[in-house]
Length: 427
Ligand SMILES: Cc1cc2nc3c(=O)[nH]c(=O)nc-3n(C[C@H](O)[C@H](O)[C@H](O)COP(=O)(O)OP(=O)(O)OC[C@H]3O[C@@H](n4cnc5c(N)ncnc54)[C@H](O)[C@@H]3O)c2cc1C
Image (cartoon, rainbow, N blue to C red; front, side, top):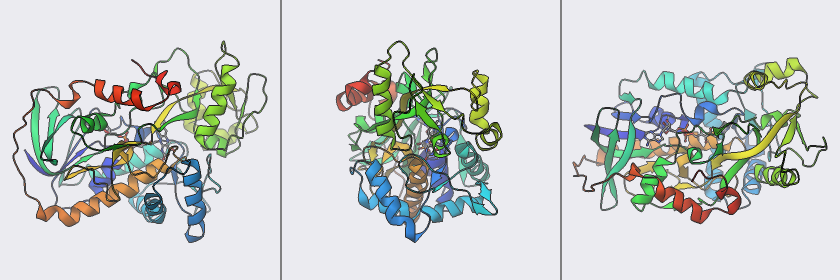
């Protein structure tokens, strides 16, 4: 099988890359599970964007302050410069961002000095993914396969020539001129996470086995406000940061405020963990939305209002128990400003990649923006180079496949992260 481009992953990063590639490029897109099983679909809060030239410096400062100044400043500037253009593209494609009197309705989240997050109620990710899926699935140059996993790369002399794929019937080889890893995050390897459980860092695992450069894996993000559900293992319900942006506060077991709820995530999470350590028999604090009316909450957060209600909490009346859980991986496969990895003809986009935008702590709602901006960078780079590259049918020489085991990634992470995080590992 020969394709010009193989895209592994059909979340927002993979879909937006496909959408921005030329129509004469033959593309194969695969996803490990079904199209809607990805973190992109779960994104609630929204997508950050610069408000205009006047906001660029503030937005930059917010991003690098949240990232504890470990950010790659060139990547942050590119992210911010290209933000409005990509949000406008989504609007043109039909994403129905919330508006008040025809103007975009911006919300705010922790670490942002401005209201600069566009959203579709509290289901932004679902809306964007559905819009992109609808368009991409109709394109004649794109073939899309569900339940098909990449289990290894075909590479020689540090150049990628395609991938080894597996579905329920067979294992087979696809030759491609360019390959793009859009395999998302690593939440599936933790006991307590907000992520889709089968997202197990496959792109990273495969990259590690082929000595492709990895960056910043010591920077993992806990989300501070995840519903405390001791009986649920694996994926838990995230209570979007925009709840705090719209007036929610965090209180301890004595109903006292102990932290400014709009500080960056690492600070709020650490403060909650400290507070929780004082009450080991009740290891949670509370999100308090009771100052908001039922009407407002049901209108602005219909998904979360109902999910809480299903579990017995009335958001407008009850305090909601919360505790931090694994949420996001700031590190990933190291890429340059065109999303190129250290292996020739191999790109990485979205959460699987590390552009350096987030530093050691991602600013809220910068992830979807990063996925969009750097997916487009990858596509434009490939569009300009595709005619120079020719297929090569390389023999796959190994006896085993990179994804036969996850030990390498888990051991690598254990060496990189601190004990607080190690406690959350499955193994
Ligand atoms: C609950 C929740 C809420 C969030 N809210 C926000 C928000 O409001 N704003 C924001 O900016 N960010 C948010 N995030 C983060 C953001 O959603 C993700 O970082 C982003 O969607 C990642 O997009 P992606 O395309 O890189 O990966 P994903 O959307 O996770 O897609 C990964 C894809 O890779 C595929 N895949 C993985 N391994 C393989 C393999 N071996 N073979 C084939 N396919 C494979 C998967 O099947 C999937 O299709 C949230 C995350 C979560 C979990």
